[in-house]
Length: 468
Image (cartoon, rainbow, N blue to C red):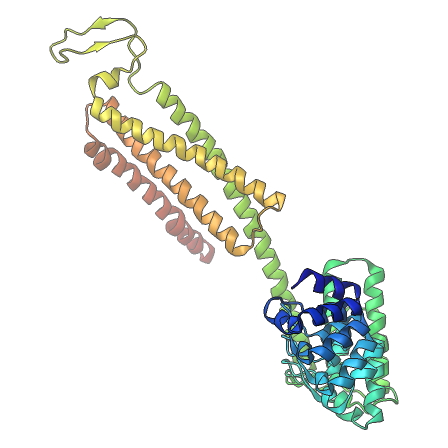
């Protein structure tokens, strides 16, 4: 967007807009393909009514454009409560009352979400009120889900004036819930967000008060709500009130309001209570399992860190003091078994006598040493990134980084095992194959027998002892 055009929209300078149009008659038409937020979006968001009308008059198609967030200009004006802009836009384009944003909501739904009462009065019509969101909700459903008591009251009044109040208040969403079901569920979007993020008792109390007001409004003389309508699960509003507000101080009062209006429980209440209890138990079990998994993962990472330090220390020690020791003096060997072998003080004896085998040993020792150091650096780096907030560790990323850590640690263990075998071959008269097939095989056999005894024999003996 031309910076001059943006500044004019930002400040609401109509004269500057007209000058730019005079300079370039296509400036408003080309802006739709060069930017997300058009000048009409900016004016509608900031409430510059005169500028918005001037832009719309010169380029009516701007009103149909959706920005990057999926909102049209009238959606932005509705959300911000700029009812004058909404009114003037509808005078020029009545069809804008039915335009939908990226989520399939019209301006009436947007105003109901934010509780913009004056905007509701401007945009309300039979057609807009009967429009549904992708979840099958009308504007009344949306107002209830967001605890907008005043907006709901306004919508009911407007609907009664054109004699569609009964139809709207008893309409069902995709789950078969009427607005009364949603009000009694106490699981609407706004309350869930507040309850999850704020543990303050006062805020929770305010939410409950809103729910009470909404329920009282819905069963008042202003509506002909069907208090015993059932949703797709066969539950009435009173059923949902009992199952969703268990333990709440406001439960009895809301139940009393519903019963005084003729509400009854259905035959599926017991099933609903059991299902709700089962869901709560499963949720507690999931939280407990997640907590145990996190503790196990932390313990495992700490254990890997300790072992990495241990392996790094041993590898460093073996690198500086290899098996067999070092020469202590200057000499030239005259032993007929090792002809032409010379040595210096401090040099490895094994290196002088068995260079090929020693080279392989030192290579494995280097792999083990640097794998240990890499593991420690990896642990420190992930800990820093996780706590500093520089890198978001969601479940998938956490699983990926743990996989890399375990693979690195596996490489460390394999190199340490191979180094052990070659080290034994250096300090004995046997070769690597003999050490692997005899000494190590016997060790693995003993370990396998131990695990067999631990996991099968002992539990079986315990079972037999218990039966006897």
